[in-house]
Length: 109
Image (tube, rainbow, N blue to C red; front, side, top):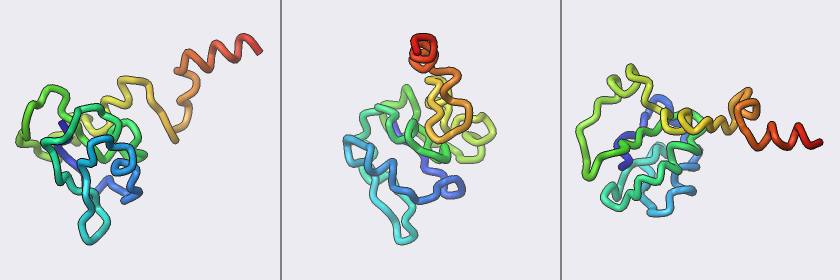
């Protein structure tokens, strides 16, 4: 379940809003995505995966809102951790070297 949007990390690009199939986010007056319908979250991780600045934290096993502390999430390296676990490097350097599809196509061509 989506638990946190880091105001410091967020660049207000609206990607999380666009990829969320459950329309969980609204925006505040500064353009920051806010979790408006947390109970609708499907824990699909799309928002976290597509976030270019790792500004989101999705709690994998939460079945309702849990108290999270942004500083603790930051210190534990949990912002963007699901994307990293997948090897997802959209917009980040050196992502293709870890992509098995890319290696297969390179070997064929």
